[in-house]
Image 1 (tube, rainbow, N blue to C red):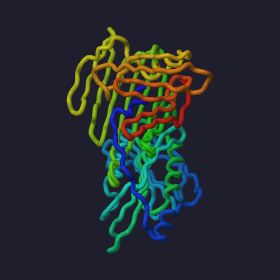
Image 2 (cartoon, rainbow, N blue to C red):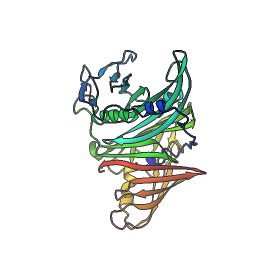
Image 3 (cartoon, rainbow, N blue to C red):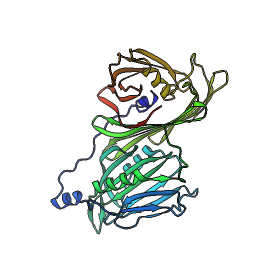
Image 4 (cartoon, helix red, strand yellow):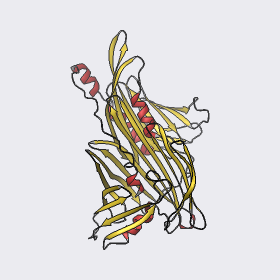
Amino acid sequence: MHRVLACIAIALAMAGCAAQQGLSPVLQAALRREGPESMPLRPVASDEGEVRFQVEAQSQPRIERSRADSEGGTWEIDISIGADTPINCWLTDRPVAIAATAAEFVSRKLVEDASSQEIASIDASVVGGTPYLTADVIGVAEENGSNALYRAKLFFAPVGLGALRCVHVGLGYQSTVRRVLSGMLATLQVGADGAQPRPAYVDVSLTRLGPLTCGFTDLRAYRGDGGRWVTVSRSVLLEPRSRGEAVGLDQVRLTVADAGGVIEQASADAVAAGEKLHSLELTRAPDGSYAVQGEVRGTRIDGGLQSAVPLRDDLSLARLIASAPEGGTVTAAQWMPDVSPLEPVEVSIDCPARRGAADIPCRIDAGSVSVDASIDPSGMASRATYTTGNIELEIERAYSSGAF
């Protein structure tokens, strides 16, 4: 249940967002302005054909490799939506800390000569099985000797291990920008046709802190050789700390397990507030012992992990739960570097007997953390809630497909 606990390991405090009050009718009308209800759907491809998508646009979008990226793994994309300025996007095929990047965007002045800028909204959703994060900021900048209001719409989404990052600066067009970019994301392909393996199972959950939907967890499981399973889990959380500042939490986990669900190797990376929390690799020796190498908060780690029982991945744990329809307690040892990088964590799931195909309420205990969860017939959590003080963190499934 590492994916359920991923966002809970680091407690983040809530903060308020900016309010839109005291604006003139002219400005209110400008903020409500939108583009056409539909625009021509235009096919787009990079010169070498590595990037392909379809997108609504007033004119043919521009796409070219970024000259600022010396390694050549970034493309710049401009999309006209009928506004004074286009949507500007950057697509990168290398690992990107999405939440950290989003926090940097919303926390710095996006317009030159801006005197103030505040976070107006943060949201997360999913399209075609791919999650995305949005944020809006409103600011005031000097223009022709007087103050002018501006609004920036930000859009972030995982693309493989890379990311799509977009911004549109200008009043209005909130719904238009979101519609155009979510449609683009649903058709976006990177790499040669058929080069990317298709996951056998996909599970996407959205994360809420109180009333704010501000993150997601994206789990993708692939069938490997010899019955192995390769699982990639990516968690993103963006939280406002003040009216003008946000912090991000990024976690990426890759796990390779054998046909019985025993972890053979794994890696875990986490970045919070722009600082690397850990970057670790776990390997299993032929005698069943485990070794952990990497860094935790800048300190080098190279040691063994002693476990009386083999470490299991999330899919194996779910199968154990699903195989006990009579209810009771299921336990397993897992690797949770957020809790303890060099020690196994015993996970205990207590569930009632299952009646039919409906989800059942279960309690998950892992170390000092306890979570109330709804478990589906496959044994995976469709919803989980964790409360500490006056903060409630909720993770709820928004999309799933396939089986494991």
